[in-house]
Length: 212
Figure 1 (cartoon, helix red, strand yellow):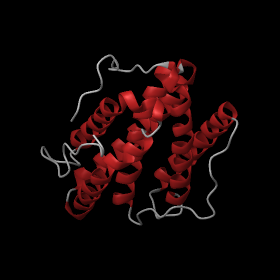
Figure 2 (spheres, helix red, strand yellow):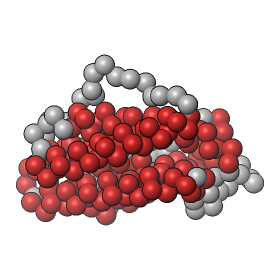
Figure 3 (spheres, one colour):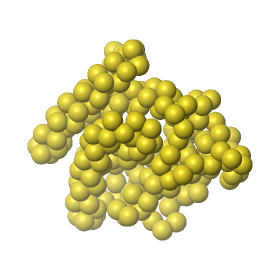
Figure 4 (cartoon, one colour):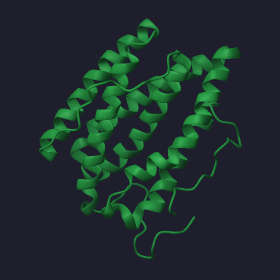
């Protein structure tokens, strides 16, 4: 993968203030998508304690959206229909975990520019840790449930580079795009491999961001 242009490299968690607007706009979109996914997930046949958690999760996302709408003075696009999510809990848990893990990485970037939004970062940590615990339970059971989680994880991972590319598409992020994509993909992959959702050489490993 090509290296960022000289003089445009970034530290472990630092972006210049010029990137703030782009990150806020992308976080608004991401929080709206997360809210729709949670609402759709709540309609599925899920464990009772997961339903309770998703109720709190939904409230968190609604509060985040209100804050971003006020900051940006605009609202995200409304959906007339909720998105489709997997019917079985094993696949659904992987999908929710994956997008929460991705959201956490963007929350870290945002908090580096806007420390006053640090509590949103903490909420994202709580969400990710919940799904990590649930997936450990699924994987520990072995058998068909674990296989379903592995299959879903491999398919989700294949799609991730293009998703990251879309979220890094703003012109203000262009000088840092390659490095940010590498960092985000590496962080999410580490979470998946640490759980055992992807093997030591998972399918799709080292996929480069498109256009790099």
